[in-house]
Every structure is written in structure tokens, then in C-alpha cells.
Image 1: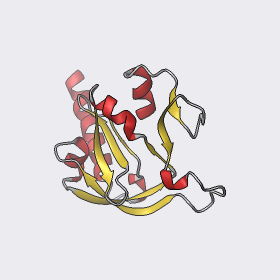
Image 2 (image 1 turned 180 degrees about the vertical axis):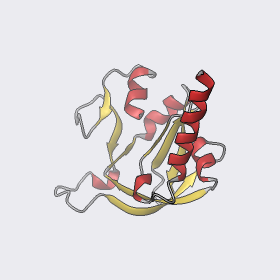
Image 3 (image 1 turned 30 degrees about the vertical axis):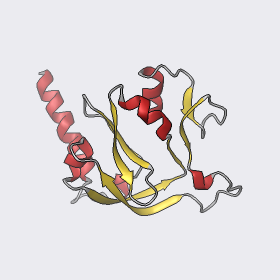
Image 4 (image 1 turned 120 degrees about the vertical axis):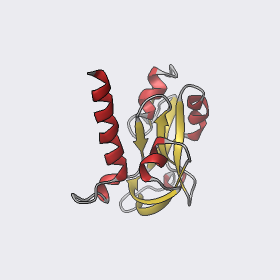
Length: 149
């Protein structure tokens, strides 16, 4: 989501993740700072349940109906905050942060129900207890479909 936003809305045609293009001139998604010196990557990623602070008034906050949640992670990369300052002026907002290291965990568009998260809500989702984020996504997709009829 953030790479696509940087390319299409911010006009940064060569924006990318350093995982895909280590030499990108616009590293909008980059390796976590604590991963930079790690040569052997096995078992070193941000992993497991972590406390997340949700920004009040955002779609993700509305979905979870809480200021704080715990979700599971499995990654080495993060959204580069240097680019979010520019993006926030163009309709994107940061909606969730890791409470421990303050990395960005969620972003969304202000004018439509487009939400991207760094954590994995599917890891805690169950058939009888789906993730609040999935429920809110399906609800909003249904409402949008209904409006179009």
C-alpha cells in the first residue's frame, strides 16, 4: 500500500522497498534499524505478539474499538517515517504504532476504507472469532456495494 501510494500519489516513480530494490532512490519501506548489521538473518525478525497503540478517530481504531491491541508480527521491514510526513499531506495517515519501538504498524487513506497493517491479523483470527479488522473490511465492502446499486 505504501509503495503504491508513494509512486502514484507522491509521484516517486522509483519508490520501493529495499527488500525488493536495495538501491532504490526512495526507500519508502526499509529494513528495521536493528536488522541493519545482521548478516545471518535466520531467527532475527520482529516476531510474535506486540502491543500496538491505535490512533483515535481512525478506521483501525473504529474496527478494534480500543486504544491498544496486541497483534502478532513476522517481518524485518518497516515504513520509512521520513516519507509519511509527506504522505500525510496527501491523504494518507498513520493509524497505528508499535508501543515498544514506535515503528509504524498501520496506515490508511482518509477518504476511503483502505487500511494497511504491518502485523498479521489472520494469525489470531478464528472461524468463530474473526479479526475485528477483517469484520470491518467486509462490512465496509458490503456497504460500498450496496451504495453502488
